[in-house]
Length: 273
Length: 77
Image (cartoon, rainbow over all chains, first blue to last red; front, side):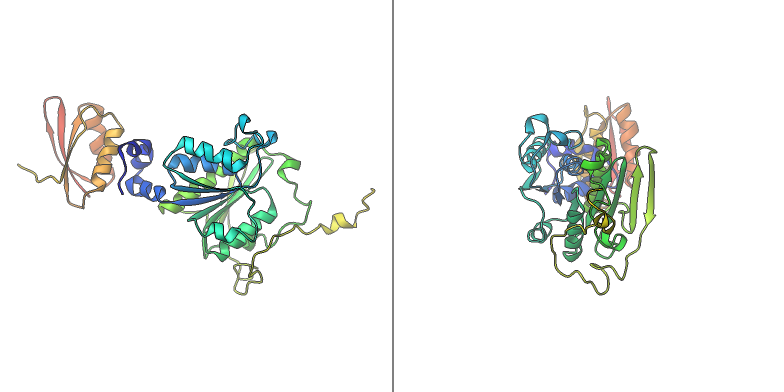
């Protein structure tokens, strides 16, 4: 297809890179990435993927922009309050880079729609904020044999791993969702906005590496960091043959919308105490 | 000696790093062993561009001083 004069200039800093070059940039322009959740993680992902010239970006989110989102969800601006997040994000992507085609899906990823969505893309970024969605994305990507980046943030911490068919999946590490109320959500515990930016940007670098085929992905490894200590750690993980979704005899063979099990400890408590 | 160049590129007045970017784009369309003629400015351009091309595995066959530019023959590596 060949790059136009303006594309040559726009992507010059990629083209200069020996590992990307013209070939890598053309791969990016032909690449398709699905971002599930256009919040704290999805915002930097969408912005950097758009700037990088990823040809097709899919956005999935059924939420609207809330004032409390703006502290970290940097693709949304104050005038976007109350607008559907996918609409607000699509507008910014188009402004950054007219080379990009945006597919907006103004709905939440659910068992009934997720497979159809992930099948259309080369790589999936999990930018969601809850365990049921994270496990649904994992299971859907394992079943569809679709590489994806898992990401989670809370307070000053972040964790991420990259799944590729054949490598360890989220359930190889965490077999099931944590019981309800054992792990606080970002809205309960808070999160540093910049931590969302750090993690979402790491996920984006993984997507770009996958599409261009350079470097080593975070396969069979989990990266965690704490921004207070500013320490990064990479833990080696292994595929679990007893994994409920990617193991030798999987028990999860069709998708369903998960609910976090109620924590036993909390259930036994007298609610009046 | 006359060289049989596959493509010519006049980058007189094109500053760094766009001169290198344009050279890379031109080389991308060529085959291994093909020759590319590039006109580069003196100073930064003639210092940096051939060095970056060598880093990427291309060969500088000839550098010839013209009036205020250089004619560089690059072999696609």
